[in-house]
Amino acid sequence: MRETTVSVCPVPTEQQPLNEYQALKESCFFGWATRDLRGYLSKMGWILGISSIFCAPVVAASFPPGKYLGQFILGSAGGGGLILSLALLRLYLGWRYVRDRLASEIVSYEESGWYDGQTWPKTPEIITRDRLVVSYQIQPILQRVHRTFATLGILAIGGIIIWKIL
Image (cartoon, rainbow, N blue to C red; front, side, top):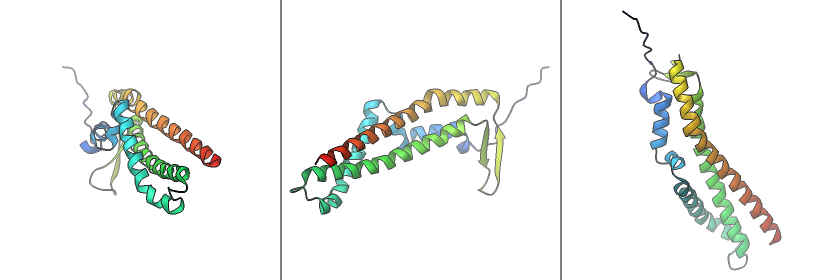
């Protein structure tokens, strides 16, 4: 009879990196990054638009729209861009955390609370599976968020240049 070694994963189900990835992918906010490009840009546009509207009264106090329309629009868009960048930062950090957990060869977990931290070395099969998920699922999401940050930075620089011209 052939003996097989079965490695039972002691990590609680909700703390297993692949399950954390699935939960993040299915969550309301973090799931936006997994949408097609149109859906993703739509969500980012909504955040920018709504946050710009909320920033408008603050900007209007310094730059009344009747007198300084250009500065008012750029100020509102700048405030909205700042809020969008914070949302993107949160999106990036969440996906980066799961990527790091999946790419690691050792899983840190807690059995019943913060005081009893444990580690479990992944089996070679699990390491390979998790790294494939990182390469083909998570890296494209992180690259998309990077490109969005870069675009937002270019728009901010363009806004600064236009502000100087006005």
